[in-house]
Length: 257
Ligand SMILES: Nc1ncnc2c1ncn2[C@@H]1O[C@H](COP(=O)(O)OP(=O)(O)O)[C@@H](O)[C@H]1O
Ligand SMILES: O=c1ccn([C@@H]2O[C@H](COP(=O)(O)OP(=O)(O)O)[C@@H](O)[C@H]2O)c(=O)[nH]1
Ligand SMILES: [Mg+2]
Image (cartoon, rainbow, N blue to C red; front, side):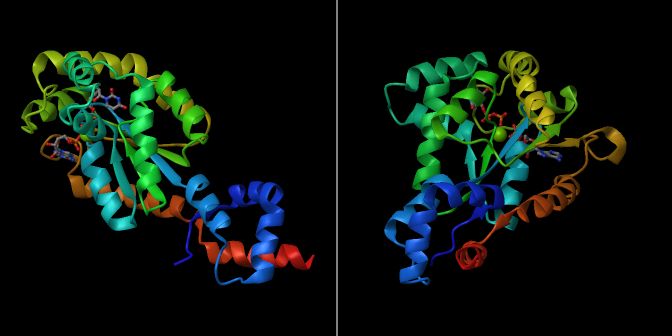
């Protein structure tokens, strides 16, 4: 029951800030956290991976596989916006207009939806698919959620493959058409790639270069071949996550010192 996920660096931070609370918790009953400590972990320790790439690069497809294999909660930013659009909310018309144009929705709207999805999930590991799409999106997320992602996966797919896939996707989306895909590619190259560069500089980016070296149907590798590469990286990065039992040991050691 009390198995929340946190990272070592986070543990160092909470040691200072919440040292007293944690010590009290472990002095009384180490098998159950106090409500306060539990909610601290729930609120502040989600393990987050952003998944970026152009329209049709295969983000959603790979996210479904990663979520299933590694137990992540998959949050599709576009899916949240589409749900909001069809929910009859006051933002519905505005979202629909921006999507049809291939533009990006206001950061406050998207970040609010993502934050709500994170807070309402039982899971503490999240894949945030298709976000942030701009530096402004990124900064708004970091300001509102108060954290950076743990790592970022980036699918670098040839443009002609992305266009072909989007036009064949057939999900009845308002933006999967020739005109909008051109606009989305412009936005991707001009506005989303700077976000990719930002995380590359920070050493948080894991890039999957989908070239024609696999010589598959569309030249980038099958979904399974790509996933094999994704698994290796995700598995390694997952090891950064430690269970609460490890925190328990660490705190006990700390208390003995
Ligand atoms: N490796 C692949 N090879 C061929 N088709 C793919 C591959 N990955 C995804 N697709 C297909 O391409 C389309 C776009 O994929 P999707 O995952 O929705 O991309 P994104 O979320 O990046 O827009 C979908 O119809 C999907 O089934
Ligand atoms: O953070 C986001 C994610 C999506 N969108 C909008 O939703 C559309 C579809 O996004 P989605 O991620 O579903 O598309 P994909 O890249 O998967 O084809 C985008 O073109 C944008 O108009 C947005 O404004 N902000
Ligand atoms: Mg998608």
